[in-house]
Length: 112
Image 1 (tube, rainbow, N blue to C red):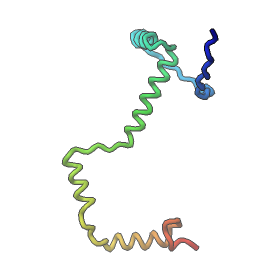
Image 2 (tube, one colour; image 1 turned 180 degrees about the vertical axis):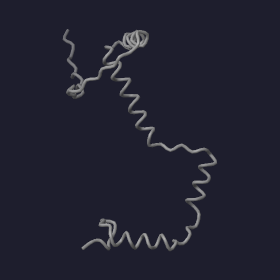
Image 3 (tube, helix red, strand yellow; image 1 turned 90 degrees about the horizontal axis):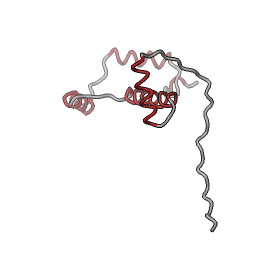
């Protein structure tokens, strides 16, 4: 009896490996990393790369997060919701100087 063939899964695109990383580690760290790779069923290189990549992505993602305490959050919301105060003389002067000197697509006065 013939078993129908199933379509093979598409493989993800292969990235060219052009860079090289070298690290000196203690014997204990090396043994731990080797054991982790063995448990995961992958090579030490793949284990190190995948975990370093995850850690880097997490750090980069978290860098853009601002954490506030409840009190800081209340202060921020109060400031955002407060009626704005009129601009000071210094602010008006700075805006006038900006309009005269800065070329910008958001500054209609600079369009010539």
